[in-house]
Length: 160
Picture 1 (cartoon, one colour):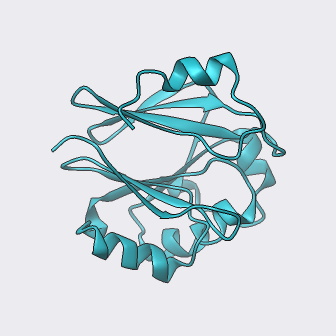
Picture 2: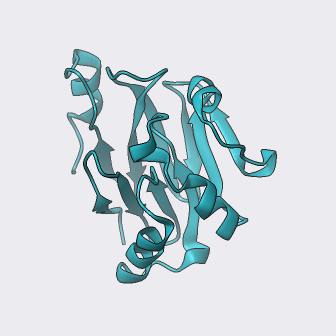
């Protein structure tokens, strides 16, 4: 199984996306209720134990509403954001679950490679993500004021 994508919600009322490989599941944002997130995991046949991380794009509540809740319910879950975003968040996250990256940095979560890239939005340091696994690429970009050449080059080869 290569990468798959499912949008649990997208829009001003809340954002949450699932990226999944055979062994690893990653949430991008958690701007909907924890209940809806866990229902989405169940609906996509994603065991909670497979969920490895939640990646935070920026500090707005329609992207962060339930991060504290899902981290509390899933103690093994890691939350990733850049330093500027962590500084803006108004809730504490225990250090064991908190990961900090530099925008533009690439890292790996399970069997999925992740690359971060800057977008234009009214937030401290908003980012979006590209995911790679088994020759497939998924890029997610929303909440951007414009599509810069850097963003276009980042997503140009994406399968989704």
